[in-house]
Length: 289
Image (tube, rainbow, N blue to C red; front, side):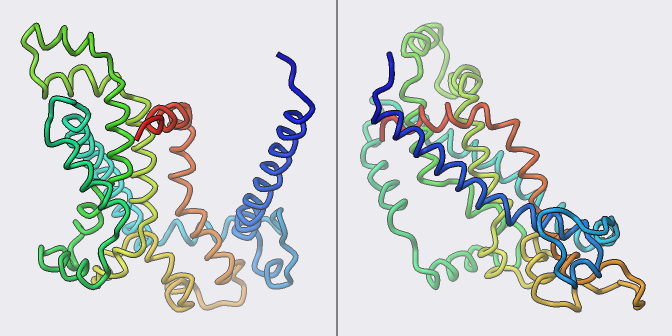
């Protein structure tokens, strides 16, 4: 069916807008990448724009040799992987019964879920609650508060509601229980929504800043984002261990740029593997509330 003139103008306008938006979004990232691979003198003279000047790997070699950065990296990686798995498990265990019309308390619980999604707890009572359950200065604070998100719960519940009734009834007639149904039939056929929510949870867990800032005082427990904050705000921290010579081919600006790119590489690498499920999972889960 041929497009009308108005539709062509609309599509062209949206395309131009998205291209401009993409350019605006990617230019700062390219500038940071170029800075991380440029020499100290080129950066000091403001010669770096979107392409490295006087290409060097010295900043990256210095960053890669920092054991404290790797410690924060693996702490963040572990909390992200474990937290994402637990979050998907908890979300599925909550969403599956809520998707069943025969669960008579489902509508009441859903009202509570919506209220929890709209109204956030004030920071002081939230802080006192987290501390009272022993999560203050505890690495579990990087995982436990994030293992169930109301918005993601609604997406998975909606996805489960569209699961084949015939398949479930046939399995129930064969003596299959609900737990076996969930883990043996429903979840293996829900890769789209699982991949989508894994990306949602994973990005939140990887980028979390507020929780470790509030609840972690031990510097050995600092995740990657807090370590980057130290590097950006404190020249002594980022230059700790650097040789005291004017011949160094890096400075604070190149090191900060390399650290920022170092922190976002894992998420950038994971996204292409989940992207093919992302649109399908998000659209199917958002058709109905």
